[in-house]
Length: 598
Image (cartoon, rainbow, N blue to C red):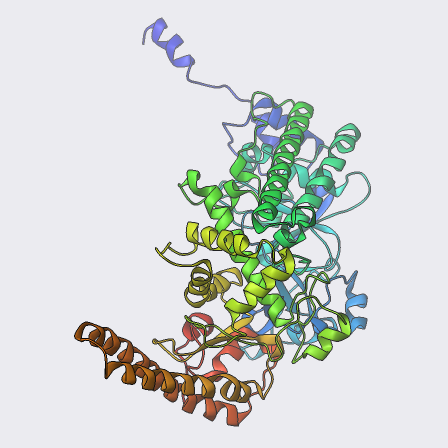
């Protein structure tokens, strides 16, 4: 080989010392590791300053886990500080970290676990295959403590969050600071930083973030760096917490963002504009804070040539950031329309919550969310409400106005009370226009109320199912394909007399209205022209089909009403939803089984 060829080939080789590889835990053959990255490991690993722990495996998640909104809120404890505190409370359900979607700093707090009596039932649960109590290390010394949790599996970017007052799962493994040398905020910042994308593949090429792998990360946190980072991370946690709590699926939800925009409450449009301005401001602040943290870490670690400080807008994991929320969509130009439509859908969901008594804009947070509560329980908390909840938590959901207290009319009343009568029509039109941007397709010659009614009767429950992860709290009773009668019933206010009341107050009167409408059409046919008779015949056939369906539904409804079915919220939606045969819609999607009829 010529001397020139040797020189050319030398350009494609990097000579590394074996000593450099020895600095990285496990001594991997990490050709891409720079000298600066290797030097970081000289200061030790996270195992020196923190304990990383794998969470529990319940053995039967269907039995022991629930979404927090399924259970009786009176049996849910969110602020236990340790095992003894939890045990003394007498409560049954406690927060449970379970990984979840890509989200940094705070959030994904959706699950709760049965840890009644210090986990007596779960710790004595027998394995079905062996009929023996499962041997498992629950890391009991760490439950309910302040720590950091992260997603075990990722697509390449880490997403760690602040955690407290919780138990944790294998998919939501956790880290706990030991000693006083390093603060939690600095470790959280490091795990969420751009530096992780350069370092972690050297430790775990599979990008499976197990506790043992996380413990091998370098731990170089000089006092000056910690001083710089701590306030930035605290602000990021606070912003992310506010963002997470703006959604109904958060147990910290207080009020709907559009309703809370008090200073801009003249119209729904101005409330939405105020929300967008606030969202953009927070998104920009988080972007700048994350880039500032990256810059600080990169500078202290001398990684300017290895890592960039820049953060992609879609990685700013706030729900109010459309680039993150719709990151799976390629229609970037439609993000604003998506956000507007979804925000209005969320407003409607909140309004229905107010109709049910779950929420009130007179008082933040949950109002009625235990078992079988009534309007008297509501009035005990809010003696003079501006918007009164429904007496029986049965809300008709029909494609035309058969009842004055149906969901559409009550939504109109809600908008009137919140934003005033002067701008009512303008607000209803904005709501209808927004829904047609994404939730439903626009329809010519349709009034605003007709559009809202169409959304409620055709799309709302699907959106509710998506929001509540197939564990709905507003249940859709449906007569069948003709949709002769449909209504929503609030799970937490259901009682043994709910079905009987549904019959007497809604189904029986509606059959009478259908019969009256049929007689009226038949009378019109006697004097109608040929063209009119064809139109009337089609309408008559439609009403007769609906009446037949409703009669059949009524017979089934009577059968179940006579059984006076009771529910135990501890059993969860999946079990309870299957107790009503095919009276309910989407049974198989929720329970996993076809409806059982008898």
